[in-house]
Image (cartoon, rainbow, N blue to C red; front, side, top):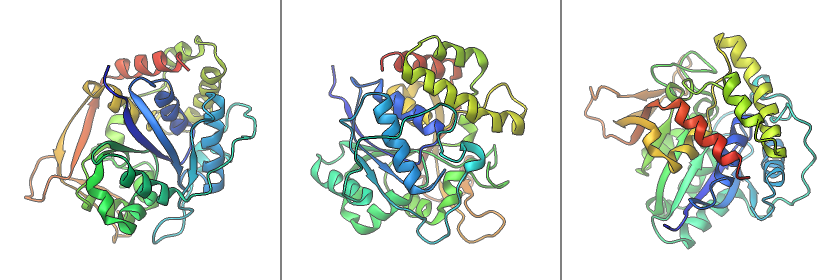
Length: 314
């Protein structure tokens, strides 16, 4: 058995973030979660930091250290998404307040320190929210950029357009300057855009299979998904809503579920109309350097089978 892959999860929980974290917790043989860093995004930082600890406790993983990171984007006012995730970010189930403490260290410093202390090329960054913490770490300590094994991120969209504006996906829109820093950094990036996540609908039969697990974490997840999907069902008229963030962890476990290609991706930071847009050179019409592996297709049944199997292990 290979050594588990070391990951830092950078997150703004969110119900779909919770699903991604739970997928990692259910995959202990393959993934070692070195720590969770939180960022302002879906809800403000105090709530994302609370929610990350709630998920750890729900899954009986009080051993996981949670670090609060940036409370606002690098150059803009914070935009949040309570209209999607509810006022707590994890609306749906009745969840107890967390008892485990937040770490004293700032999330950005934890990222820098971990990348410096772990062997070069051994740590994967798994980002589920705005890229503020990672960009700040790269700016603060340029020496760590070359030490990252890979950055697997949920964010952006191309053929699907945006979900917060016609052009922009929420995670990139919240902090486009941070995304621009990360995409220019030279770090190996795997991008899970809306093009993929909109293929992963929480259809009733898929959610029922999770409910059938019957454990407290699985039941809480089902209640979160039932709350979370109401917004997208109304918006897209679909059976269930797209499940965005667990794509990042699923890729680390089973990359063969996904198909994509190396592209150049530029982040729009200036235009009022398209700020936060991920401009993906899918057809390679420019000679700009290819800086990200952009995913386009996913085996949805395989994805949900993986999710259900790993949730059952928690």
